[in-house]
Image (tube, rainbow, N blue to C red; front, side):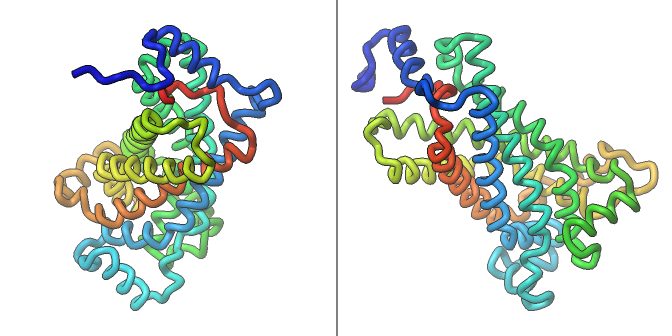
Length: 329
């Protein structure tokens, strides 16, 4: 049995695409160009920094479980209790500085870049072709944006993991960053670049594609133009939660490897590739999913929060329209 078209559909894909393109066009006084993408970048920077920073305690326990599953073997709640009992309540906020700073930069490039590369696809292939092949556009835009974002994130993520795995390593972001730079050189910041790409690119592709698809499914039943801002935020939260769960499962093995490779420096003459192969063999499939419970909670929560905050800040800054290619009411 064929599915009836949405109430606003005409039955003609070309006419529907033209209507969608017209609806997506910004108002005459709306920001464009650099003014528009700087707003996207700012909204992305804030949403990522706030959510990742707020979930630092969960990330600390998750990282401990990945690095020392023998000691931290009682799940997320048990891990919290063990860290606090052994090191004090302040220990769960270890790495807050590099987390907030790193994800501020990464969020700007990720969300701003995602919108930018979507627009480039529209400019290159035309609105109708981009809309008809929107899954490929989402994947390509997310991958390109994440690659650039990870160049900015990697040094700060390496510092964060070193601080979490060894609380005595240094006192905070500046001290940890400076110590790694002085004792191990710039290359140490990027020893985990391969794993972070292996983790973040599938993670970000899943995150954006699933969010876009779930959001699109919602708005085939609900008229977005008549939906209040509050309900749009609720839909963004729900879509983000589902997207976060999918992204966490897909990227978990690489996240565990990233924690392992940044815990300590490699042996003299040992390359990154050989270290990754050795770590993968030691972990196995089951070991690579250590800490998945904590990470599902963490990534589901932060992704839901990110899309809700991102959508609200975009609206507050007037950064709407221009890069929407989903087919909705």
